[in-house]
Length: 344
Image (cartoon, rainbow, N blue to C red; front, side, top):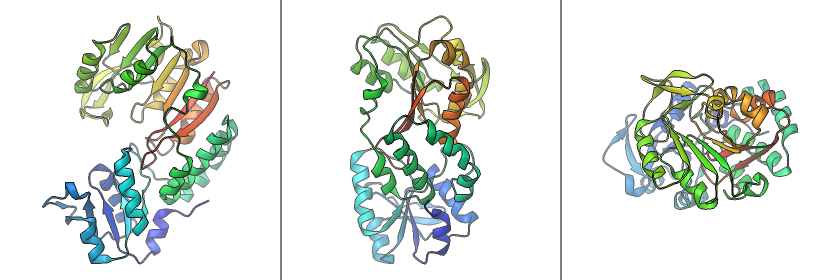
């Protein structure tokens, strides 16, 4: 098992610099400051360098900080799956010690040796339930990545986004539920691959995203769009409207909440894709009848919360222990684009 990145940084004498700004950097800075770890610079990709400050430090370029410090420790503070961005990160990591710290997209708590020890039996249980060697390798790599922040562990286990199609066994006649449909991009991707689908239900809570989803849906047949958040109860819920991918439960807005069971009550469902910004376990709790009686295949994102790697498969297992469980990670830094797959 790898050593915690944070403990390593506490002892390191190299200057620590941040690559990127925004919410991810804020979270990483919070952990650094709580542990008394100094960071001495912030840089952005050359095209984004501006005359501005971030947390009291003037935004710089990588070249300028390299000239100033020479050998330094770079902490990646944003996420990307874009090939050109990933290649640039690899170029920097060939010259510097570079880490992609694991901080939760939502919720509290960070993945440390103490966290792993506290949940070790849960990890052992999930490991025993995984259906193939690639899933087990992926879980081991993700654990070591989350502890160490070393991108090499993610490179080691990544697969193409089309690889899961081999074990998902999707036919051309699916009744597809897209929970967290954003602006319709994943619906469009699904239709491109499976044009002979039976029906689509696309659910998106954010108002601006839903308008874009609705516009995309006008070009498709047999599609139902629902402006709501998916949860464990039907009614209303507090919500944060951000007009992007990070809209989430909690916040000043009020929105309709629906359960998977109510969405599937009067219709067939064969495949569920769920990427709902940290509300996955609540949605699973509201899907007990569906998972027991209709047994759809499922793709569930597991990168939003620190506990997702164990909490999500155990939540499904408590309802229906007959599912085969697979785990895959697609090219992305940090460990976003990571999903569990449940096959009845």
